[in-house]
Length: 398
Image 1 (cartoon, one colour):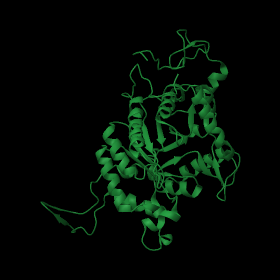
Image 2 (cartoon, helix red, strand yellow):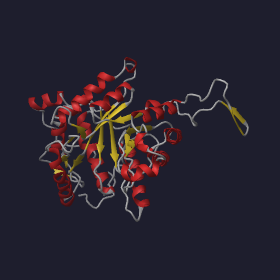
Image 3 (tube, rainbow, N blue to C red):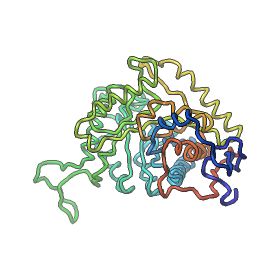
Image 4 (tube, rainbow, N blue to C red):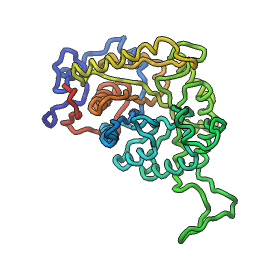
């Protein structure tokens, strides 16, 4: 692709020609919106923050390549103007087992973008040692970490005895453990007012080091039940809510998620009014526009394989799944602007599918950044501009 060939701005004349990336373009002014379009515009969500969550995949026999490509995806997101890049923490899987370590590395590869974890299962963590690692990574990134927690323990039958001594099933591995991490991050001194420790060349009052003063205010909880979101609100944590919730009193995903948001906001303490905790909505969004026929077929097959789970509550916990948002930018915008949950938040997080390839992730981020997010009111960060001749590292592009 020649320098300047790619046109970033989305054109609205559907009869116009396509550029080298497969997007429609025209020199004619856009047609005047209809009254229906005017009404839809009045209800369009006002998204002010755009982030993405990636699984951090790698091959069993070559973990370096996958992890390096994930770091490069974080760099790509920053160049593209995204506000945040988040990583999943996964144990025993082909993914990142320590978000703190990965985000420390990402902090050295980026300068502006927020760096998040969604989510760290607290049951496998030591509250003090984890707080130390997170504080160190936050200082190295100059205060850009956004840390999400959960109380789930995937693979507990295999991992529980490896992580804990004694009968861990009787330990508090839930909300109280997250509260202990928060207490450590706040940096209160240990011992009494006269307690000091001596180290070479130094006498000091002991507390977690390094102390990163703002990190305790950048902690989130991934809540899918009414009980969990109430606790998050009462604790003053940010709320991460995505495409999986618990069906409590309803079989409808949208109703259940709206109920979660309402319960969370009711639970916020009055002292949160001056600086309300943030709420971010996650959606699996897969645009077709920059993909070729093979890529589109792959995306359709991915969504079709996951559709059955959205039709009814799943399992004894009545888990509800949101449908994946897959299609052209126009089709995706129709779905998003009709989503009442999106209208309740100002932060949108793309949840990238598992087991896709780097070039596919780049195409998804590119199309969302240029064709979808601006129509939802979002504007990229000032220094987030791709070069005029940008072309994703892809064999699946037009």
